[in-house]
Image (cartoon, rainbow, N blue to C red; front, top):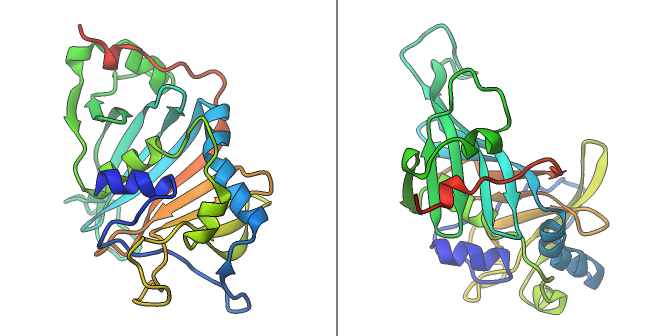
Length: 262
């Protein structure tokens, strides 16, 4: 599944059990992408690579009301990332409640690093308000709890995120031929973005199923091929995993400690 998700981001195939995410307005009709739209979608990976390190926020719904939020930076030149994570969900504390009335609160938090092979977590230093990449630099390799990726929403989102940048653009002709579609035109923070469904699964039947045979990934792309948001929906979860891009973080410097051998 994980390898397939990465392939989706690079014009690949769709894993079984993943449904497309879209919310079209009533006065718009989706259609195949134009070559201009396909060209801009094809440029998103190279633009992320060139903008590295890029500030990102990932929100993953783990089910049962548990949500994981990761804020950090990704360097697409080295395919390494570092940030903080926070897990929220139901607690026994009635002092704070969600809109549904169920008690909610922070279940866990700390530092997180990830790359193409897996992820690592470590406790955040107490009283340290410096950026996560600075905090992570002071934690030795032995201080990280590392593991390979699993198929849960957080891991799928992290692995998808680390694979979204590349040192060359995709092929726009193949994107268009593989079923990428224009869904709508949205505005985020006052800027216009085309909402585009990515390439279909190779074995998907156009128009078939609840998702119309579309890709599980939806991209928000600006007029220059800049990527603002990506969503991914997985079966059984009502809320898609969402990745937000906030632009280049020129001051960030990813540490070596989490990937060191000592």
